[in-house]
Length: 150
Image 1: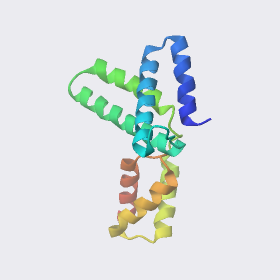
Image 2: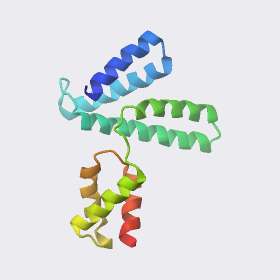
Image 3: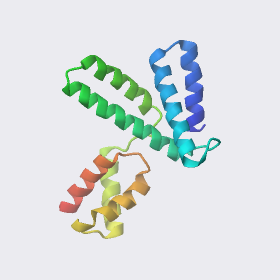
């Protein structure tokens, strides 16, 4: 089942269960997916699962930024609301890589590319294709820097 069909199905289930939070998040997500499809190639466009996951990751990043801002501002109730929305969104993303998996993939990619300290961009480009959204760019970057400097 594609990500979008799963979202549609879960949206209907949330309506039946009268789960206002989940319903709101899924409606927002469905809207963001539709907007991305229209921006891609018109009203009738469909997003692939990879493109849909990219949109979901963008929404997750927005929630993470909001949580950070709310916590800095002392708004715990709003931060908790965002955390709840974040957990709903995370259910639609592919399983994240473990730290050991990530270290192994970075090490293999550096060996394949034969990169030096100055070639972090080459390694990152190769890694982005390999991990396909199973790790965020910030984590990847930190791991690459750590391994290239050692």
